Length: 269
Image (cartoon, rainbow, N blue to C red):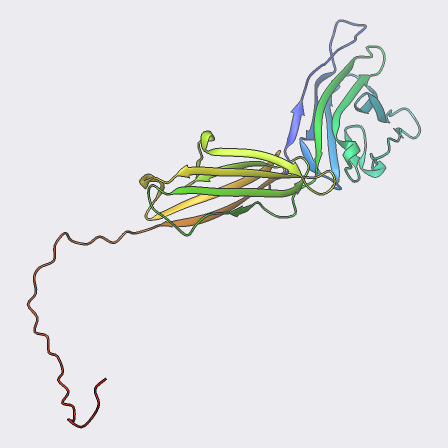
C-alpha cells in the first residue's frame, strides 16, 4: 500500500491590503489526496507572515466554516461542529488541523483562509480536495488462466477487486508490460451496501513472443488513488509439442513366437 501523499494546492488566492506592500506570502494547504475511512487525518496550512501579525486562520469544509484559530481570543481555538467531522483540539493550532476519524462526511473540498492583523488585514485562501475511501479487505483475484499455452491458443482471464468505494482501477500486465487496451474490458457492479466491485477481463491470442524462457506472466493490479496498490500475478508455461522424424530407419528384427505342445486328449479353446 502506498503511503498517503500530501497534495499542495495554491489556488484562488486573493489579497486585500490597505498598504502597497504585500507581507502575507507563500500560503499553501497540505492535505492528503485520499484517506481510509476511520483513519486519523492531519492537514497543514503553511504561510509566511514576514513582519505581519496573525489575525485568524479559518477552516472550511465546502462553504461551511468548521474551525477557527484566533490568537487574541480566549481560548484561541473555536470549533463549529459539523456532524461527521470531529476536530482534535489538542492536535490543532495556528497551522495544523487534525480530524480524529475520517467519515464519508469528511470527503470533499477544504479551504484554509489566513488573515493578517491590522493595519494591512491581508487575506489569502487556498483550496484542496480530499477523498475518503473504503479499501478492499483483500487483493485482486484472478481466474481463468491455464497452466499451459502454445502459440495460437486463446487466453481469457478475469480479475476482480471486491468491496470498495470507489471501485478500484484495474490494470493488466503481460510480462510486466501494460496490456494493449483493445485486449482489455472493464466494468463495475454493486457489492455490499454502497460498496462496489470492479471487474476486468483480458483476452488475446497467445503468440511466441509472449513466452520468456518458456514462461508467460499475467499480472492484475488494483489501485485506488495513491492510498491502495495491490497485485496478483500468475504464470503459465509454454506447452512443448513433441516432434517426430519424417521417416524411421528400417530395423530388421527377429521375432520369436513361443510354441506350446498340447496333449492330444485335451480340448482346445
